[in-house]
Amino acid sequence: MDPATLIGFAISLVALVFFMILEGADPTSLIFLPAIVLVVIATFGAAAASQTMDDLKKVGGWFKMAVMPAKVPAPTDQIQTLVSLAEKARKEGLLALEAQVKLIEDEFLRRGLQMGIDGTDPEELRAVLESEIAAKKAQDKVAAKFMNNMGGYAPTIGILGCIVGLMNVMGNLANPEALGPMVSAAFIATLWGVMAANFWFLPMGAKILRVSELQSAQMELLVEGITEIQAGTSPRAVRLKLTSLVPPGSVAKDAA
Image (cartoon, rainbow, N blue to C red; front, top):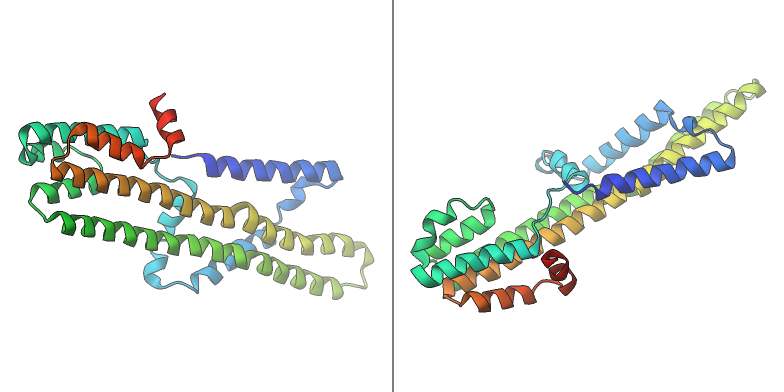
């Protein structure tokens, strides 16, 4: 699990609480259930209205991808795996990889290698794998857009909560002592809307796109490796080509 998102959430919330303390405000005033219920549930409902039922069945996976994404393997680990497979294929032929392929955990790599072993035309093999990558990118964009939609709706819904709170204030003008707390409660809804959008939903959308980029780059690296193995390229050449596809900083860090 990549904890960066959770760390970011915590830092943002601590900064807000610290700011409130310095301003002399009471941080516990944030714990206002009506505002929380309105912003969280209504925002989700508004975003859900823009999706299909098939999309909504995937929402749990989208939140998991944003908050607890699977760790992407290090590029050098993937390159070493592909080079090892290239060495075996070079010495013993592609068919010699069949038993080893069954032990590979990465489904995308296993499927691609099996297609190569089965004699799939190189161009067709590349086209199939690249189409799968494109489909994944498209699906990830839908997930990111859902989070970004929530980030767009939350502040406005918070304002709606504030308006409802102020309506309640106007209905109680005869009770001056209660007006202060009621006005404060009204504005807390706006605070929750802005906070939820900028602390959580928008960063979650950005995180999904970043994870998608990393996963897609990994898959593209595997495609190049699979096609080179199928072509019978020498292990040294495979390593050089794959290494050239990885940002130099990443290679140096992983190698260390």
